[in-house]
Image 1 (cartoon, each protein chain N blue to C red):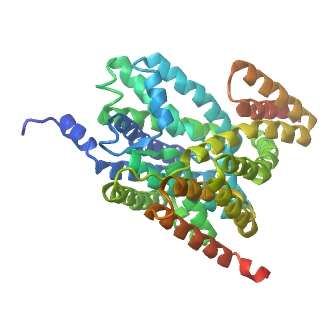
Image 2: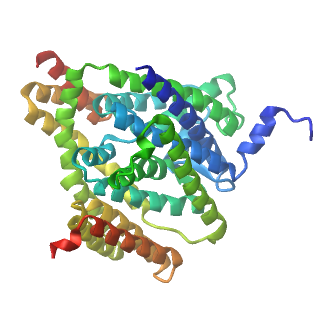
Image 3: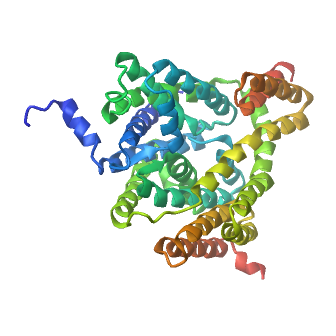
Length: 215
Length: 236
């Protein structure tokens, strides 16, 4: 018993149910700090363009309702679902909830302290992680089996469908902006489509490359 | 620039390590609480034990993540969902081809995930900063209208139709809360998302269930609070 190596102790520790709290805190701290990076350096938000755009809308226009409300829906759903199935979805809970929704909520209330520097952001993220994972572990222990929160698959389906709409919208926007970006977006998306890659990336890269050369 | 490199490394090491350990725990759920996604679990299983499969699967998403980072500063959800778990698995499986001792071991995945996360984040974030200002201006000029249309009215329409197609109860909740949300916040999506949540839960558990009652209470309080703070009641 006393002859365990450090690695074995670590293995045991990481296989304990409650260690989830620590792992979740770390992940939440990183993702919240990622949003801090996005606010200060315009890069590093852990989410897709379409969802980050909601936060952008708040930053530019001061209206955070869409970001906060949308993300709160996913966060609540995942917190209720995660402990019941034993697998928490990091997309809805962490990346959208902690990364977009909670920052949007804080900024809409004028609570800027967490974003004053990198380390307050990390710390705030860890505290948020502690609270959420605490709730999750309580639900896991209290709620009886067989009770399920429904609708997450519908929300996921609609969320994934949203991403698909972005590519055609980008091509249309590129065509309206300028003839060169338009041609670039068309060429880029056609190539990416042929390759079987995400068309969105091809449309943006094509518009940027053609625009960069000819504008 | 140094700031970005250091911060990105810290974020990547902490986040990548924790997410990869959470992903390894997926193979031991529901006995212990894991985090990740069902689709990630399925994808990890699909590449079972082959480091090349794991690596190339992650690589495909790496390119789209890089494009989205350069264009809008959005790393995409795939960084944590797919690239970190799959590349960590690939690194471990090269040395030891047994998934039970590598991919499914939270400690090893944590170490590999921290390395992958740190390198990946530094790379993506510095690359986004290195592209010329003219190019990022073009990207934002093209992306701003596109994402604006997406937020309103494309997303409300998609979510609304999804709610309606999910049955009468869900459709009704989605329609009412979506409409209320459009009135109060200007965007219907938050309301429809919550409507789907309440409607489906009510359908599965009945209105007597505690979860449904708690959900309805949270949503009502939330909308009243938002309406109050946005001065909605002054419109009458």
